Length: 621
Image 1: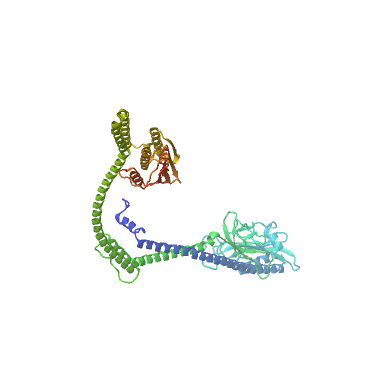
Image 2: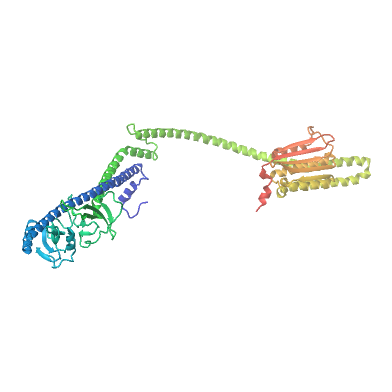
């Protein structure tokens, strides 16, 4: 949903840039993402290679600069040491007036070597005997480190700080022993040296500027004590700790200072002249970590911007190319979308044989097939409506017939009920009336007793009719179950006939009580009435049981005279009614009987297993 505060053109632009609304836009965004991803990957990969290469070049350059500085310092110190030794010979030759000789020698040396700021000489006891330029502040130098070092050999260091000239820097101070012809040390000559280069910036092999003077130059002795360098570090051990193992002897390495800063350190031995003093001096150049990585980071940043620009150009070209390549697909999409609004418009098929053209032809064929199927469906729909109307009338007719069949079934049921009740009572009453007519002729005195019997039979028929009507109105079987209803009926039968009998029903079959149980009860009543009327039996057994959990079996057996079940008996509908009721509920009826063998009636009703437990399940809360 568009934001109400955004302009319409911006809302449309955002909607058109949504890749979920257009496959073309999705392809454009994919190209842009791939171009940027490849640019970033190339930047990281190439930048890392370039960074490593630039860093390696910087390390090699610093090593070369250190070697060059060590060589230049060695040559300069060697030349000045030769000049000092020449001054020693002049001093020893002019032993008559040593002070005058020293001044002349020192003036000549300063004239010949402008790098000497001043020169001074002291005897073996540490007393100054001559100077040239600005001498030390005190006349007794016996306690000075440079005097003690000069007695032992060539000494390098800083005697006293002094401001540097505008075009040069103070390299340091040098002291050397003065020996007589026998080789004994008779004094010390000291000189201050100037270095014609920028302060703390030795000769560089490249034109890379160092405006902040971050590169530091040092001269160390063999114990790592700073002889020449910044004032804060002078005469102190170098306190850098290597970060990683040295790759090769003399190779530059990164070290960590006590304040946590990292510096790149390169060292080279310092040998002043052709005669090394054997002091183990080292020239050291150190650069902070930021300066070491400055050019590498700049190259990496340049590669990043170049890759980003190239990726942006690639993405732009890819987007324009995608728009051009998908223009035909967009027209096809619009043509297909227009069909949904008007079926009369055909699909625009672009020229060519590429995927878009083939897709358009496939859509056109599908559309033609759909239109043809729609016409066929309309025709079939009309035919179906006609057939539905015919079937509706047929269903209505069948419904009428079904209602009529229900009425007929109800009439048959009433006929069976009347046969089972009133017909038997009327037949018994008719037999009694006939017997009274014969008795009136032969034995009139017995008529009153028979009339009382006829009245009892009439009362019995009336009671059975009322019981039948009551059973039509209510269904006691569903209330109590088939077992209790059949047991009550059998008990009334025994009380009425005085016969002996047995009734047996298992709990599972006794709970059966759906609409078929009523039919089974009526069939049992009919069978018991037949026993009462025709069997002349003395004993009757009724058994109700479930067989295998899937069938219900009802069995009624007597020990009467029996009969032929296959014989046709006109005017008697008892067996016919039993078979009709068995067919209505889907039960199997089987009658076994013969003359003098009694009668056994079997009714088997197939049931689902849940039918036995219906009443118990329904009664469970």
